[in-house]
Amino acid sequence: MKIQEKHIPIFTLIFPVVGITVATIMIIYLFSQEAKGHFQKDLDQNIEHILQNKKDRIQIEVDAIAEYIRYYKSLAPTDTKQLQKEILARITAKGQGKDDYFFVIDYDKNLLVHNDSSLLGKTLDKKRIVLFENMIQIAKQRGGGFLQYPWEKPSTKKIEDKISYVVGIQEWGWVVGTGVYLDDLSAKIAQEKQRHSTLISSYQEKFITAGCIIILLSIGFSLLVSRSIKSSIMSHKMEVEEKEQELTTLNRDLEKRVEEELEKNREKDKLLLEQSKLTIMGEMLGMIAHQWRQPLNSIGLIVQNIQEAYAFNELTKEDLDSDVEKTLESIQEMSKTIDTFYKFFKPTNQKNRVDPYQFLQKVEKSVKKRLEAQNISLLATCKQTEAVLVFESELMQSITNIINNAIEQFANTTVSNKIITIDAFNKHHHFIIEISDNAGGIQENLLDKVFDPYFSTKSKNGTGLGLYMAKMVIEVHMEGKLLVRNSNDGAVFTLSIPWIQENDIP
Image (cartoon, rainbow, N blue to C red; front, side):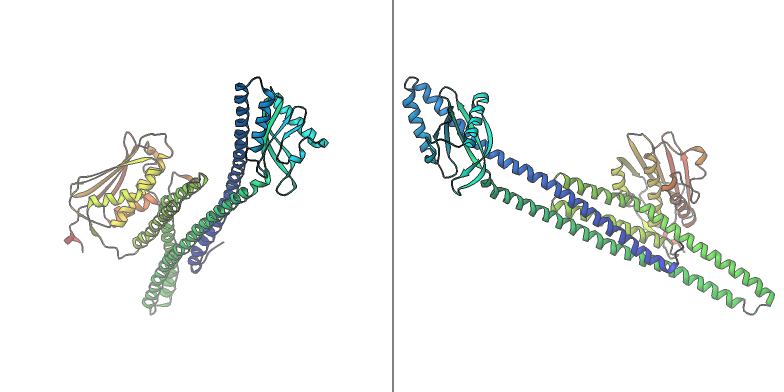
């Protein structure tokens, strides 16, 4: 499908916004689902923890009574009946709450102590006899343990599920126990569910806020790109129209045959101008795409950091604000790339005085994040102290292109100590910058082709324009030289720019 020129700014505005919006919504949805699953698991664990705490408490209380009985039994080993009577009385008097009480049964299934005194000494129904048999069996076989069963709750007179812990006093044939009604835990469980619901809502609000910020930023950035491209298209269109008008004026009075020939030439000129315009536009878009890889990679790493922090429940508002700030910095860097290339194609660029040391610092800063991400060291030395006159932004972009190619070359090697070196110095009235790496170098049969337009060793992932544009900047715009050779460890790019004094500029 062929896109008309007038529609290009519209497409550059709509497509990124729609794509980022859809991606943001999908990410928010996936994070929300993952958060729900995480919090549900946490909720289940907390509910289990509440129940376990209750079970631990009643076990401690029953074990304490059992130790109490064994202690006093050891003090009075002969008068057993009197001791039993006293201990039963003490258990009966020990904090028999309405729902929180102790009970004692003997191995003959007689109820000796209970909160409901009306049950003492009475014949029990079949279900309760079976229950007592289970308690006795646990006490005999395991010495003690938990069991769950339905029992009438004194405060409500309703049958509720109850968990009890029982322990056996083997010498006396007793089973001592206490328990907790499960419905008493419902209030704590409800509070825990409410707390988790609040946490889920809070995280969802954060995700939605971050998503809205990203969408708004993408809209603003797309507007900038659209306006920049539209301005470039209009500028080229006006130049073509001016040239056409000049040709029409010059050839108006020529003979018919000359007019016919010139008309043919005009048509050829139109095609050449159109092709040139589209070629320049394509080169600019290709270079922008090339330079956007690093900030886009930074944004991708930030998103991964947010996801990992969230997965480990370490995502804080400060971390989120910091990540949003880093994302804004990457987007500003992408915007500066557009401005740089736009200025590059304007014929009004002027050379300015640049301090070599500060210039190298700017280069280091522009590629620092990508180098750190790839575990690559950058060693820069500057032996040139006097300021030089260059097209600063174009020179920086050219050096960045060379460094980016070195970074991509490292991806195809197994070198552990990855190093890129930049040396700047003055030699024979030329400002020299040498950029070298230890990535293994370039194949000898490709050395003569690396600066050709659209030539790339990166298959479908490369545009083949980075080194071509760098050579054009150095050799055409700055009247210098850009050469490449192989060293023992890798490739060496040499930039040689004539030393120009400020008063030599026309």
